[in-house]
Image (cartoon, rainbow, N blue to C red; front, side, top):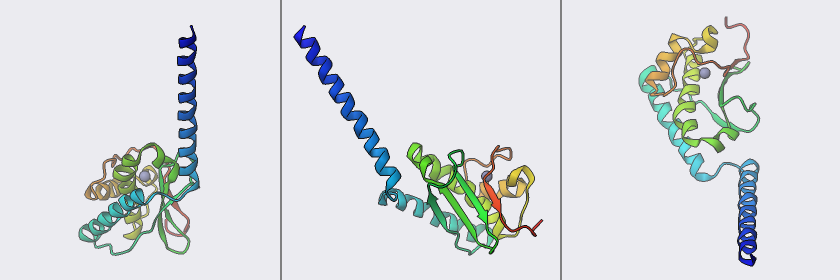
Length: 163
Ligand SMILES: [Zn+2]
């Protein structure tokens, strides 16, 4: 009997340590800036997209990509055209925690394609910005999720006199 108790005790202790470790990791992730390795992956992807944008669409504009924890959790990313004619891509930091590769391979090109539509002066609300023009750009940027019927709100056009 004594052995069973000690096994049980050991399992409980190990599980508790595991939980604290998971909690601590989450806490660290939430509180700290992205680790250098992840930031490097993001920078590399953005650089590739910038080159493709130039080669395929003649867009030389540098589009800032900002990782933030201020987007609502339903958003993976968002492309914004500001009142001051700036184009900014925001990525949801919380979503990186769950699926880093998806964020890099799918979400960044998806949002970058929205940014390019703004850069070439194509502002469309059709399918919430997921029209044929966006779809074509998304595919040419080698995006993986370029379907026209993506059901989400991920563009914000703050300037009102564009339509
Ligand atoms: Zn979108």
